[in-house]
Length: 313
Image 1 (tube, rainbow, N blue to C red):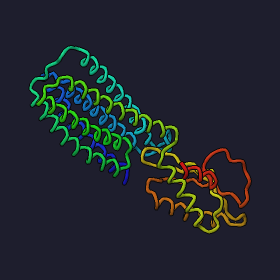
Image 2 (spheres, rainbow, N blue to C red; image 1 turned 180 degrees about the horizontal axis):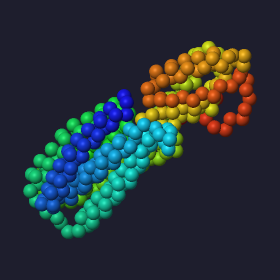
Image 3 (spheres, rainbow, N blue to C red; image 1 turned 90 degrees about the vertical axis):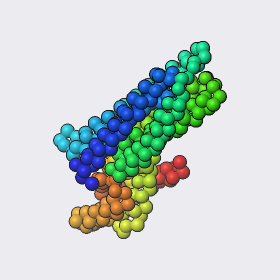
């Protein structure tokens, strides 16, 4: 998939998400004000953060899909990581605001929730809409290997649970009249918002630190494939890094000292081909060739010895 096609898919997905979330947020906030329901108002504010998330992923998508240039020789894909970081902070802020407002509501006098039928209807519409949007965004994110869009989709999955909780809670209030359930539900919603924000914050932090759980599988794959190819010995100083949807690899390996440059190049090319075939996110592999028995003090990267530690984690 080229940069242009990827940008088109990303842009279309983000625009659809922005439109749907904007409509839901306006309806929820409006219903929250006219019914005096903190729960649906909190759900509306949560949905409003989804609009910001989609806008950020839209902007990041346009930046990250630019081809490499002289100032960004590795490409622009880290824009998605930056967007995920910013979005996580927005989500955490929204969660704290909802939590504080809900606590204040809970310690005040009894609050009457009016026209609970309206709250039930909009909560049901939200559950259905969010489920459809979640499945759509997740499929797009996986298709174009976009962490920002996948993070947005996972946030929407939490929104389904949030809206379902509001729906069930308001239904109980409708039949029992227990008013304090409304701020309790809003507090629960705030915890869901905060959980999502912190998870995205940690994930983006790991990527900035050149760490990712999926890279462990990459290291295992490289070691195993090197052991299956004749002449290759001691793959070491292996370092993989994520740039958005791309994975880039630097590594060293040993070949016979009397081998010609052309022969060594052919073996390395064959090795690269096998690795990329097993994971199409890998876009570039830089290999430094050394002669058998080349003894150096290696301070960085993964090798056949410390890969055992990774497997045990």
